[in-house]
Length: 223
Image (cartoon, rainbow, N blue to C red; front, side, top):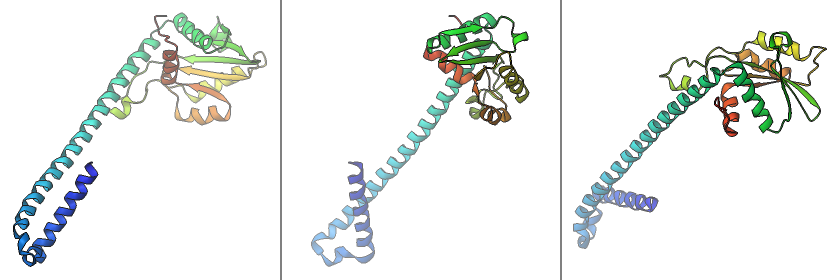
C-alpha cells in the first residue's frame, strides 16, 4: 500500500511541475482550477512524505539505541555470570565441568586429584578416545564498561601460548598419550594461541562458550 501511495504521489508531483513550467492547464481551460488543486495536493503529499521519512529515520535510530542497550545489558549479564563462575571453589568448578560433560553424553569422567603433578585437571574416555582437560580460572575484567565494543567481548587475564605449549607437552607425555587435548578458561586466549592450537589439534573453549554450554543444561555455580 505504501508503494502505491508513493507512486501516485510522485506522479502527481511530476504532473504539477510539468503543468507549472509548460502551462498544460492553459491549453485545457476546463482544467484551469486543477492547477491550484494539484499544487496544494502536491505540497500536502510532499509534507506527508517528509514526515514519513523523518519517522522512519527516528524509528531506525530508536532501534539502534535499543539494540545498543540490549548489547550492554547482555554483556553485563555475561560478565556477572563469568564472575560467579570464576569465584567458584576448585571443587565446585570441577563438579560443574564434570556434570557438563556427563550431560553431554560422556560417562567416563575422572577429576585429577593432584593437578600440580599431573599437569591436567580432568580426563575422560569417549568412543575409545582418551581426552585430557586443563582449565584456567581467570577473572573476567572488561577493558572499558562504557565501550560497547569492549563490552561485547570477554577480557581479563588471557591464556598464553606458553601455557598451551606446556599443557600440550603433558597431553603427549608417554605416561598419558592422550588422543585429544582440551583447554577451558573463564576468560579468553591470547591471539597467537588460536593458530597454534589449530595446528596442534587442541580444542579451546573460552568463557563465553563455556557459560553457554552450561546454561544449555541449566548448570550454575549453585548446582
